[in-house]
Image (cartoon, rainbow, N blue to C red; front, side, top):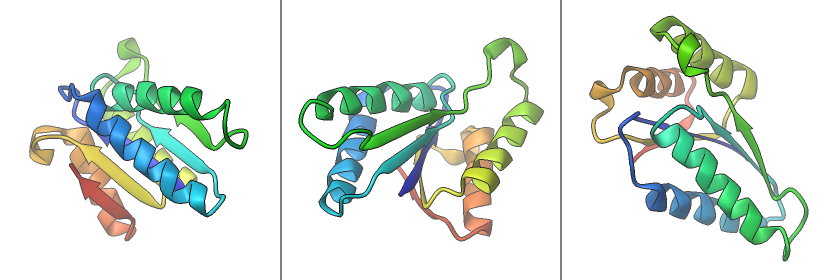
Length: 132
């Protein structure tokens, strides 16, 4: 399963993201699947998702199968970030990685252009999504 974690640059609650990642892991582990966790990796929700995924991976590695969670970050270096580069990265993640589900952590998608763009792409491509 491929899951994309993204959201607003002002999102600060890593615990919620951690809980979603842990729940996703437990669900696919019962099926003996691997989670490919994709994250925008940028500040806010993307960076917190990356950190939470690394914590989950560290917790499960001593006890379970190798590489239960594979993490791919698509962070754009801050000095290279622009709206155009963000939109291009979003298209790349959606069209090349083809996530099965998107988890968006943002108070109001309209206040985060990048997150809104990802959710619109998901809707166009009929990808399951959760706005948290």
